[in-house]
Length: 342
Image (cartoon, rainbow, N blue to C red; front, side, top):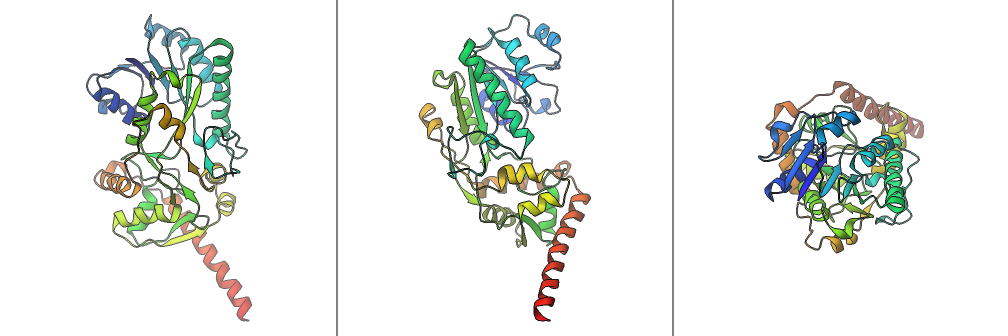
């Protein structure tokens, strides 16, 4: 098949790029990113600013595709451009949305593609919903051949997936663990979550490329393994060979005492227990099975990060913030105990 990716070198898309290259597919990337040097042999890069519509059309010429996949569309204006550019050029248009678009807290913690979409807490998710609605409207009215994909928390070898971290990513939390310092876990650590390795995501995604059952449909792609947040952090500590010193803090409190986007990322997403039902995906792609358990996947990630100093980006601001939050809670407990014992 002849396939075009808008993006193609991110956390999710790089694994798909590698898998399609291994399968010998004819793959093109519209990409101006920094990871093109890591691309497999045979993948062709079209270096153009996708936001410059006229130059984009000129770069594509009269090319047509079996499938076009947009990994970096975040607002409706970008998808309106995609529809203008690719209508009549592709047999399938795949859009990467987000499972954070599901209405949370959900009425049933088991989520499938029929779960309602709404997120009053996170603009990112509301924009994804608007993009989905735009594309599905064009499918219904004009036959634009769209497939919606909703990933949840997907990780690769370059960054350890966490619930609470700063603007520079997860390394500072890992550093705190190795230094024997306490780390913050949102809530009481017992809410349910799912972590999906990007290599597993790629298997489900590639099974939907060119799949006639995928046109006009939405699919979520996640691991079937469900873990509590305490279990997630314990797996990370085990991989590091250190004791987990957890401090549980309510998501509402975290959102109220920082300028980090915990209102969206926690209250609108990770603070809610979720279990994903992948039955629809398995009906469309019977061979799909996620095989990377988090305990092994995160160990591989930590080994990779520890051996690549360029990924160890420190964040003193976040480190100091964690210390202040933990100290404030300890002081509050001490003050209450003093009153009670007085």
